[in-house]
View 1 (cartoon, rainbow, N blue to C red):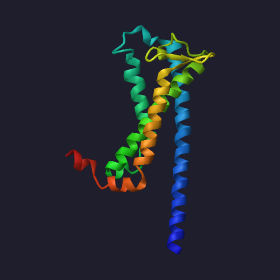
View 2: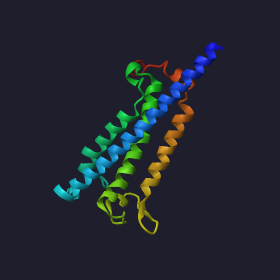
View 3: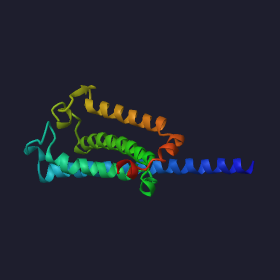
View 4: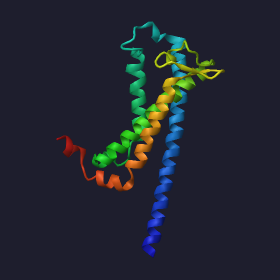
Amino acid sequence: MAIRIRELYDNQIITRINQDRVVKQILICLTFVISFAILEYYIFEGYFNTFQQKPIFLNIYPYHLYFVLPTFFVVSFILGHDPRLFKCFRLGSVLRTSANMWVLLLSIMVLEDMLYFLVAGHAIRAQNWTCSHLGCSNFGFTEIPNWYFGAFLLALCVWAIDNMILTKKNLKYLDKFSIIKILF
């Protein structure tokens, strides 16, 4: 009986720690996104216009490839990594970190893009760069880029897979396999 009470208590503490971690991730993510949107607005409006350069491929400019994407990758990795990752480099930890990172990366991309236009003080229009990839859907007061919907669905799928497949039981099994041993 005492062991069962201890297990329940430990599970409640672990659940509380995980909830606190998620709240901290959300707050840090929002702080970063707001700061980055403001920074990007002042970079575009005040110092230079990156769109005077030629795109590297499709509609991706050097600014996006060499500054925005690496910054978003680093932030999403820092916020989304599994604390066990650096202890053991186990397969389960790597998969959990990858899933969290992709959900955060997609969320950061969409939120930052939305907030950029909020900071700029105008609604998204079909002529904007963000609508040039997959077009926009008109909602009367604003246009919403179609890639927002795709990013949201992809993040939702990755999150669902993470929560269905990478359960505690499966992580224990997957953690038996070391990434170092698999790769080498």
